[in-house]
Image (cartoon, rainbow, N blue to C red):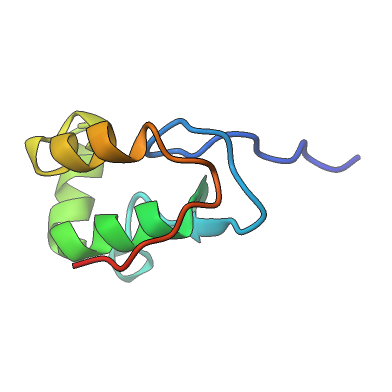
Length: 90
């Protein structure tokens, strides 16, 4: 029996579109194995704002990225976009 297809983004909670990427909440370089579904724009935003060391620390402390101040503005903006929305990530 196959696992159900993911329906929402781990970071922004919007419905997923045609393109889905898989993010390691604890980076592979830090021993992470689990992956979670994210939009490509959300995945790029995570890695543009956090180093692997920071991601590992936040995951170990059970700090949800969606509540981090660095992502507050992005999440407010992306929340009104359609699932397959794409824009360059700075």
